[in-house]
Length: 276
Image (cartoon, rainbow, N blue to C red; front, side, top):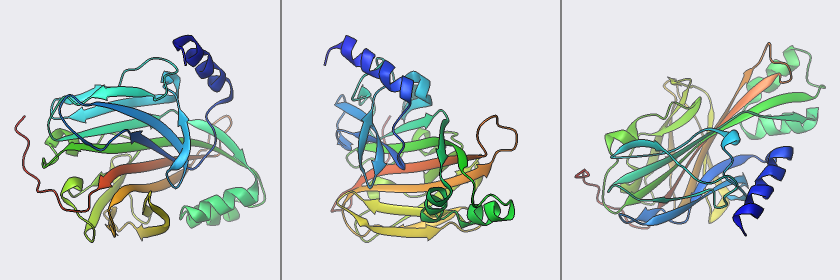
């Protein structure tokens, strides 16, 4: 598709907004990389790691960045590009990709909203809506995506630049080096909301090759959860948190969707400290 056609397509999408779907993730062309590799990045939304690709539209995000041993920098592309961007691997070790969307708005029928709340482990919001007398009313919701994806060159541990939070409203922080894990290990994560541990949230993990076999764990008082990684493959870890909006002109609720995507190899990679 020509650059002009891509830009026209992006303008049309801007007019209607992104497709409404549950999960959002940054999907790279490969997870295990070498220095100076070109890696294409698709922004996807859908369910169970199957979904539509979204183009590069700056109005749709507050942050689209890469972090590695050289620091953090924005991912730069052209309006309407799909894949949304192509980056070159500039440092040995781990490259963290991050995307924090702007808020998007949706209106949901009462039954559909309650089913969605229960499926994402937000029964407390179901109870609050009942207390407020809103169970039979439409829900007016803003939603925000907070996605992270990890790439790595073989055998290198996460550098301090990659271990730092990105400052997203809701953020999943791996406590372990993702690329030192192997099938049968547990991945320990901490869920942060406004930079503080979030207790009682449902964290879900599944792999692309068998999405129906989901692992569900509630975070403890420190926002921590431990997830069994049963088999190799591409794993998505996700969590959702919702807050009441009191003075918003349209929305009554705002939800934040955190995701973390990485590939687990069949055999453990021995991690060592990066040299740069």
